[in-house]
Image (tube, rainbow, N blue to C red; front, side):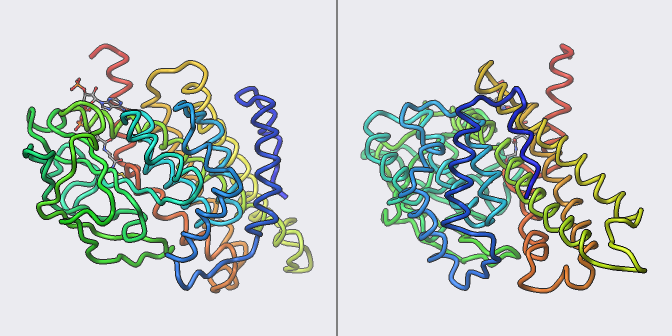
Length: 385
Ligand code: COS
């Protein structure tokens, strides 16, 4: 069992400890610790969204009062990721795919969409990346042009999680009020809107629903706009600020599970007449794992606490949490595979699954290199340069 003493840290309150214990019990009963091969990820993901909704857990990702408690989001992702990467994904996407609506949608839009997402009856998606604009959001080229009955969207989005199974997409497009970052606007596009088609489904090392979207004269009403025209970049960045620490939390969940698996193995696997855990090279790995997990948790819950308690932007703290926790989890999982030896790369073994699950987290929602750029800019801005 993982070391849960971090839940006593001052970043968390009693209500968080209570929530974590309840979610832990639910996940143990409803998801379990097994490796899930998920032959049909669309069906598995849809079922997990439904289960999470029925259990009431999506309320953290889609808060009814419009106020995110980032610590609860982080605890949710950390706990779910320890059980199943796909369960974490299903939870996270309901939040990321509605965060901009929660923060910037009209009351009518919120009433129409959010309760169903929260109940697990509607699947959400966030469509920002394009074939030629991933990290460089300001370079995106999908356009939205004002027409009599709303906005006409044309272009292509890719790497869209829940692409193909989502009921709506939060889409960022160039509306041209100014060049670059100041000329983007966000819209809700319902699945099935004429002109929106699902292109290639993308198969990745840790399978989850992922697709390319095409927009060809796809008209949405002005009522589906999120925020003012030209404010789309800030809508996207403000949403990512909330969800970036939660990516770190998911990585932390993977890392804790890897350490649990590795220490169990090290305690029982005999080599050269004694358990692996008594060999110094294994002890060094275990020490690095414990240290990496605590430093990641400190950064994740520091960012979440700051946003919840102090308010305002947490751009640098969120970037640090995501960067450190994802990079560290990759190393921890790699060490866990090493401790398992040949078994560590066998299909059906948890550390093999974690090894595939962690990789994308160092890329999505801002690659590690982008997080460094963001941190450096924040440091220089704080210095007044
Ligand atoms: N919250 C609110 N506003 C923000 C913000 C944030 N986190 N980050 C930037 N802004 C504002 C800036 O203050 C600036 O406002 P003004 O025009 O009023 O000065 C504006 O947005 C433009 O910011 P900036 O000049 O920093 O834009 P850049 O194009 O240089 O930004 C980075 C570059 C790399 C920071 C940005 O593109 C980024 O975060 N990329 C990663 C995106 C990502 O996560 N992609 C994955 C797709 S989602 S899975």
